[in-house]
Length: 304
Image (cartoon, rainbow, N blue to C red):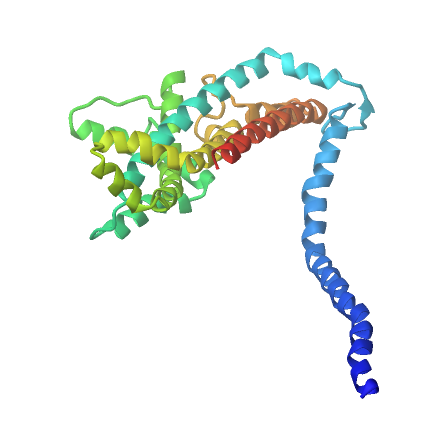
C-alpha cells in the first residue's frame, strides 16, 4: 500500500523536468520558424539603414572612391532647392490629406448601409486601388497630355477650350492631386467603412431617442468613435505624401516647382552623383517620419 501511494509522487517529480523540456523545445521551434524572416529584415532593412547612416558621413560619389567628410553632407539640408522641396512637399501633404479624407469619408457614409447594389459600387470605388501608382501616373499623364489629351477632346465637344493641365504650378499640383484622389479614395473608403461598421447601432438608436439630429449624431457619436480609424488613415496618407515620388516624377518630371523631397534625393544621388548628400537628406527625412508616426500612434493609443 505504501509502495502504491509513493509511485505517483515519484512520477510527478520525474515529470517536472520533462514538463520544462517541451517548453524549451517549443521556444526553440518558434525561433527556428522566425529565423528566415529575421534574416530578411536584417538584410533588407537593418543593414541598408546602417549603411545609409554611414554613407551620410562620407563623400560618396556614384562612381569613385569614398572618403570621410564628417557632417559636411548635412549642409544639403540648407540648400535652397531642398528648402523649396520641403515647402512643396508639406503643401502637397496637407492638401492631399484633406481632400482624400473628405472624399473617402463621404464615400464611406454613402456605402455604409447595406442596400441593393451597394456591393457593386463598393467594388467600383475600390478598383483603382488595384492599379499600381506608376501605372496610374502614366495613365493620367496620357489624359493630361496637351497634344492629344482625351480630356481636352471631351471639353471641346461641350464647347469648352483646352486646359493646360500641367503647364503651371497650380494646374500641375491640382492635376496630380486629382490622380491621387482617384487612386486612393476607394482604399481609404474601405478603411473608414470598417470603422463605421464597428460602431454599435444601439448607440445611434439611443442618440435618436434622446432627440439628437443627424449632425449631432455625426459630431457626438460617429466622429469620436471613428477617431482611431481616422488617425490610422492620416498616418498612411501623411507618410505616403511625404515620400511622394512616382506621381510627380512621371506626370510633371519635377517641373513647375513640383519637386518633392524624394525627387530631391533622386537628384542628389543620380544627377549630381553624390550619394553622401542623398543619404544625409534621407536620414533627416527618416527622423521626421519616425517622429510624426510616434506622435500619431501615441494619439491613437490615447484615444483607445
